[in-house]
Structures are given as structure tokens and as C-alpha cells.
Length: 113
Image (cartoon, rainbow, N blue to C red; front, side, top):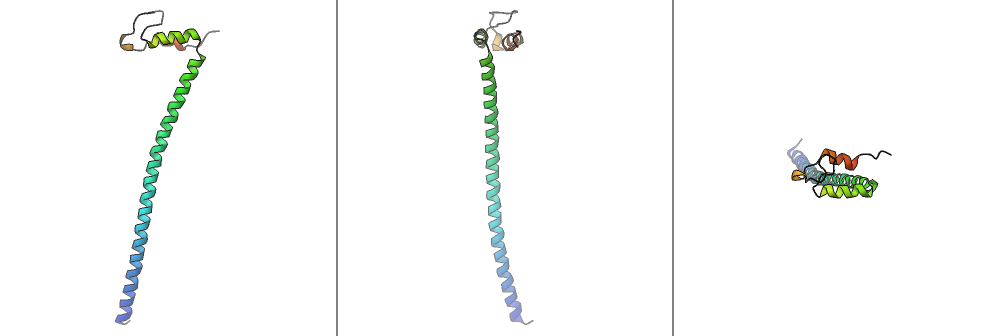
């Protein structure tokens, strides 16, 4: 091999390496963009799942309220205002609006028909 062939070969190799480097840089940028989109979509997906869970909980609470009789709804209103509705302490104010298991049992127990 003469010097000119070696020089031409090195020049061609240099051009090939530069082309490969440009392709690698473009691929790296594309991968970074994909990772960013993926992260954004994962966050959005998580927020949507949380929102869907909230909607399910609201619907469940609404269904319970709709299935309650008018008298139980009145008792619930009194309870939410901070008063006991159970036999043990009926009419007494709940301290610090803490929940009372007896009152909750009165509100949400299944009717015994």
C-alpha cells in the first residue's frame, strides 16, 4: 500500500466515523425525547388513575346516600354538625368532631327488614 492509499483510506474512515457519530447523536436525541414523553405520560396516567379512584369513591358515597332513607339522611346531617346520634350519647356534642363507631353503626348498618 502506498501513502496515498493509506491517506485516502483514513479520510474515508474519518468520514464514516463522523457520519456514524451524527447518527448516534440523532438517535440519542430521539431516545431522550422518547424518555421524556414516557415520563410525562406515566405522570399523567398516575394522575388520571387517582382522579378515577376519587370519582369511584364519590360515586360509592353518593350511592350510599341515595340508598339511605330520609330519616337516616337527617341523622347524618345532625352527625355531620357534630352531635351524637347513638343511643349512648344522643344529642351530646362530639369532642373535636371525632368519629363515634356507635353513631356510624346507626347511620350505615343494613336495614333489618
